[in-house]
Image (cartoon, rainbow, N blue to C red; front, side, top):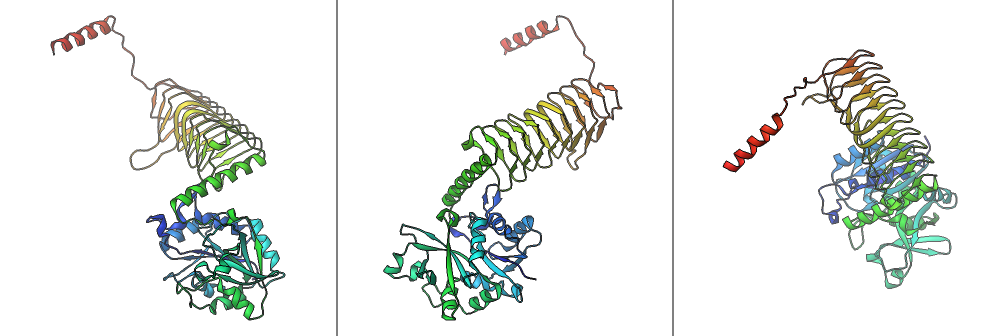
Length: 447
């Protein structure tokens, strides 16, 4: 089957991160660096994606499969260079028709438009390399060109002074027909300063064989690789700046853009309003016209049109809010569905629950869903009224149009249209408060 194949190199130790976690799994925008590379490649609609793993291979493979269950992985047991890494993918690509694109798991900002430009350039060249202009003295590989032809790539440590003066630098991203790439990679040697097999050598080998090589350029910011914690922090800032700009361009209002933090997969519809200090974790979808108020944290949830959330609310994975739901301050919702028009004003926890339409949840309500071993569900029917400070001890069902008295502990099902009160009867003793206080004060003086 013809089509684009992706090879994503993710084997490196990342020693400069000073971490036990594989470098490509460090989070950026709420997702591993690896997911960003996979996301960029996904836009090419690849027929297969191959991840070359090494350090922490099991962890990297698991993370890759959470993004794409169909991904293929291959282990690079020894890290002997980028050319050696690509060689590991050869058995999986034998007989594969179409192009192969080599990406890097620690380079998160390659745009899909750039990859599409590289594929378009393949009509003119057998091998296409992604380059960028860099005016400084960076230790990047240099692209040696003759007119429009790329002659070779020279690594900085192997470059002459004249070659180091070249400002056109190598990103490492390469596109070629799969069978051609495998043939070229098989011919790479390691006669260089590091004794490694450089993927960059494929250009010179291709030229020696009479094949054309060319360059597509992009902004240097796209080629940013992450090697240190400081670079990771800089990448996070760059990601957030881009995500905020894209949101506003798509019709989202951010009242204080610099305080809003997005995740890689955040989806926000036009005319949504996002207040200050809102944090999006992974897996959040906000429909058009919803409002997220200040200091709200969202993760793994869906918020429908016309809903309002916050301020100071927390929605955890599995929270589903229908249209016109109101969730107010200091409300936490987890794995719960709130039907249209539900109101949860303040100081409430709803976990493992389903709340029917137009129900009102009073302040201080808690679904007691965990018994120390298992989670249990609470079902609340439509148009119910849950009194303030109600404890709903799951599993329990409250029927439609039912009510609970404030301060109740509900341990049994409440039928439709019924009022349930589960609290101790109040006893009032006149004058007792003053007598008790006098007694307490006298004992304190004696002590």
